[in-house]
Image (cartoon, rainbow, N blue to C red; front, side, top):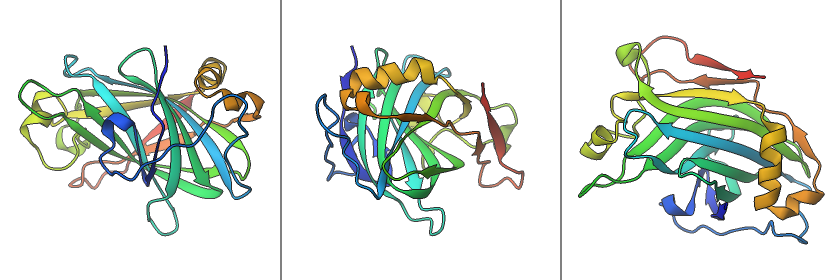
Length: 232
């Protein structure tokens, strides 16, 4: 059964289990309710699987993204409805955003905590521009994210957020990096979104997944970002 975690935040999209910013509220996507978007807003759907392959004992239990205004770099104000799937590491995200150009800039997540310690905190820099169309619903794709061993040392960005600490080390984030894949799983994902958010039944959902995402390198690296192309 899908469990719903509606939440609203500025810039950082996070599940209720990871609501560190506070001041969050929901919007209604129940059956029989009109789509809660104005003529200056649109909805974006994002399906995510995220796996901690370096430390499977500590799976990710929450996930979010940071969306920015590409012109100014400031965090966007957005409302979010989210549902956790049948596993601890799958999520369905519905983002209500202003119409126009947007920039997906950071992937964030939290692991289950090791005994006597806090959770591992993931913060992984990416760059992926996309457009929100006023009054429309867009499917952004299915994202498969895996915390894996680095293959090129310090050139690759670490999975951890902030400075190294014991929880990030124990949960495998400090020495790991995120392997990212994007697929167009529209036929599979949209029925799950409608099951969890029945108000979407009346919507025309545009199948327009990201064609490309750039994975940022470590801050000490001068190499170009790593391109991730849509897998069809």
